[in-house]
Length: 80
Length: 364
Image (cartoon, rainbow over all chains, first blue to last red; front, side, top):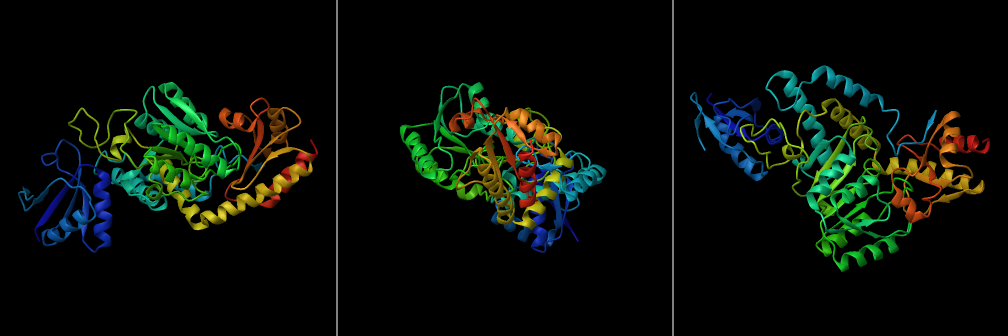
């Protein structure tokens, strides 16, 4: 199953997203954002299954949780 | 020992608080500074407390900033809102944690409302000052000396009416009175983590309705490439390594307060305080009491207040004498020259504690 990564500017919004997504039944994992993807250095990201991406993004928007970018696939190409 | 100095800090800390602090020190690394287990555990520990506090004080988690204490919180709030030469309304019962930063900043303060336990007077005086025009307002939720609970909801309403930004000092109310950042519409609400919230000393919270200006700059674990501080909460105001153990303790204390319930805690404290008031009056002391009072009582002794506090301490009753870092409140009550002896009850207050105090007092 392809994975996607949603990056956040700091740990708190990433944690808030993780908590709310898990409550909504979306499986996600909190990690440090790889350095080559971290905009402006140091950040946290959530890894999710790609089939739940659309649901996740609309969920984040609905709860006004700011995220930075979405990367998908083996090469982690910028998706959004 | 009967400890009646909860206005200074809660004591002894509940077992659950002590255990959580100890546990956090064994589990946690530095939050936001890595992806390994101990760092993530620290981040999780802080986040759990942040969400619990947000839920309890009616705001979103990002609006909860952890500080080293209420004084730290107030300094951030005051320096974010006001600047030199501005006029700011304050109540007649403010602590030095409010008056000293404002003085140091060159802010002119206008004292509004000096009558103890009189909501009508407090509101009338406060509105009169707001009408004349001020840059903002700062008021305590509850006097640390006299236990006077100010009509903060109505004062907040007046501030919104006159479009005046305001700060509430919740040092003595968090943990015994309801606080709602959302309903009040405050720019900031400052509080201790170690008094009514039962956490360890060295902890405080700042609820941010507005964006604060950081007092310090440094590492936040975010936007590391930039020489500028992050512009977003809570990172903006949480600089350097956080007090994870202390925050874990605040979370345990907050959980205990939630389980007990604010109304039950306040009722217990008030019952014990009322017993003291009655007994002190019977003994002929000048006691300050009235409607809208929490579990804190001040009285003027017939000897030096520090001397009496020391004598009580030597007989196992821990109270505080003096000015309680709030000369303005004493000026308002007319006790600046004498000071008072303050009894402040905590979440486990009992009428028996009050009676024991009275019994010891009569023998001095």
